[in-house]
Length: 399
Image (tube, rainbow, N blue to C red; front, side, top):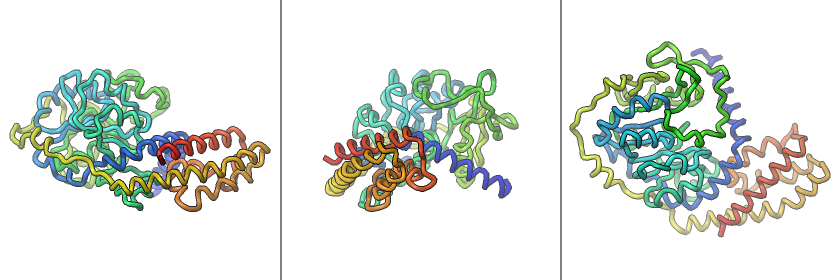
């Protein structure tokens, strides 16, 4: 890959990140604030490092090939932990496989479509931006939050709520791979991690049993031209997740040879992996007892109560600062005075802790506060309404 290609890929990734932030920044931030107590009290513990050494791991994505490979996983699932992306649970349940860990780190995936009609997962690995409904759907003792690339979590770490040893990656499946490696499992066997479209017939992203409601707002357009990447069993395959494939491919290239196996009949090729068709997949039956090792996994890491109380106090103060600022902002906006509106908002995000606490929303709003200014009134109305909504959430979380 040439220098120009690398530069282009970096620019493309930055542009995609900016667009996603504008679209989802408010949702990310509102859900993170609502999850503050859960994240502070139930983080994935460092003591999980190497705790399942000696066991293979079975990491399941929701790609089209899972319908073919899941029956072969069912034959060996008792030998090692099953780490399932949330959208893979129904295909696994269909062949009698329950998840020892479900991984759900996507802000848009509610638990109901994933959990309805499937055996309860043993543990849930969640992100701070996961829908708060996950905290109600899974017993508190079975929830384990992992850190992510969020400014608010950076601020929490600075006041004593340490980041976790495992962090959110591009998607649920990639995060599950990281958890499996942290647990010390080997080999790490991937099922349904296609990272590519099913090219026969209409472009298909997921296995046949996935609940379509999970992805109803994903914006997927099957009529578009998809980029091509190297395939496992064909020279090239179309992918709808080019950035995810690049990131995972780059990480796996640096891992020990032979650690990651890909069990599939299709999909995108990943560097430094051993690829095999499902009918050729086999594991030796010797190894530690899976249930005994899982039972010994320690519980979640909790922040000291006084630190959580301090965080709540900062939230309450942040809410008060926003409330104090909003009347003047609305008055300027009603006059159509956009420069003054921006000038009034800017100190909220450049002074004190407010900008860090508002995290993803700060990154969404900041580009609008410096020239060239957005002139469209409805854009500002929406941003101010979202800021008002976050102040209410902060006030509720600060009590």
